[in-house]
Length: 452
Image (cartoon, rainbow, N blue to C red):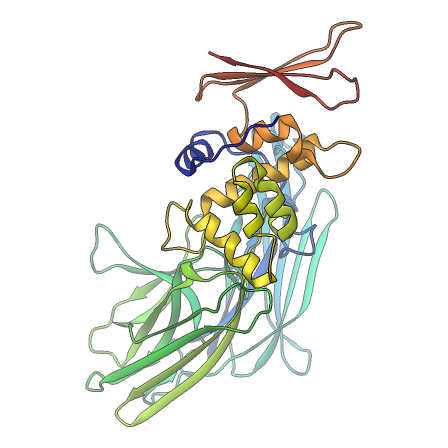
C-alpha cells in the first residue's frame, strides 16, 4: 500500500531542501495566463509644463525568442537570440507624433532547458508630446523565428501639470527604495507588469502631486476585492498611510529593470506621493481601490480597478478536484473528506486552511510550500502519467517526485530481455528508490527503498 506523510514540519522540510521540479513555463501559450510580452503607457507631468510625458514600460519573457548558434560572429560556443522592438504614438487623427526603435540581442552559453526560468528583458521608452489621447503601437519581432507581437489597442490620455493644489498625475504601481549608502537618493521602481498586478507583488501607488509647502494633507483609501463566486473569502482593507517627497521624477537607465530617480528640490510645490498598499496579501482576482485626498479645502476622489493575476500558476491548482486528489500523499482521510463535502466555498476554505497551516510566511497570500508541491504534481502528470489519463501523481515515481523533488541522480538500466529499472538517489535525505517495469507497460513501480 502507498504510504502517506502526515507531518507538516517534515513536509515543509522536504519541499524546501530538495531541488525544485523543472516544470515547463506555459506563459504565452496557455490562455489561462498572461502573454510573456507586456507593456504599459504611463502618463506623467513633464518638466516643461506646456507638454506632457508618456513613458512606455515593457517586459519581455526570453521564452518569446528563439536561440540559435551564433554563426554570424563565428562564435560556435555561444547561442544568440535577436529581436526588434518598435513603439509609436498616434493621435486621434491617426497621425504619428512620436516613435522609437530598439534592437534586442541576447546571448548565452547553452540552449535554454525545458522549464528553465530566464530573466525578462525590461526597459522603457520616453516621449514628450502635447496634451491629448494617444494610441500606443507596440510591435515586437523575433528575427530567428519570424514570430511577432503587434498591439494597436492600448490608449493613453495625458494632461499637463497645472500649478493648482492637488494636481495629481496618473498613478503607477511601484516600489520606493532608499539608497543604502546615500540617504538623499530615492529610487522609484515601477512593478512593470502591464496593466495588472502580479500575484506576490509588493508596493503601492505613486503619484506626482502639486501641493504648496504650507498645505496640510489628509488621505484615506479603501481596497476591496470585487464579488467573486469562486472566492472562499472576501478581502477588504483601509488605511491613511502615505509618504510625501519633495522633487520630480527622472527616468534612469538600469540593468534589467525600469527605474526612476527622485530629483530632490527642497521647498518645491511639486512632490511625489506614495501610498503603500497590502499587495502582498491580495489573492488573484479583481479589486477596486478608492482614494480620498483633502488639502486646504480642496478634495480629490478617485476609484481605480485592477486585476491580480497569477502568471505561472501550477496547472494542478486550476482544478479544485485535482488539487485535493493530489493531496493523498500528505493529507489524512478526514482532511480530504473535509475538502470534498459541502458547498464550493466551504471546500475552498478547507483547502486554503490546510495549506495555511503549512505556510512559512502567513503575512503574504503567496504560499511557497503549496506552490512547490503543485509544481511537482504538474511535473509528475507530464512525465509519469499512464495511458489511462493524467494520473502521473498517483504512480510510484510521481509520489516520490512529489514528496522529495528532483533526484540527485537517476540511473536507468535496460538489460537485454530483462526488466527496465530506474534507481533514484537523493543525497540530501540519504535514500535510494528503486523502480521496475515488471509488467512491461511503461509504468515503473517501487520495488525497494534503501538507506545510503
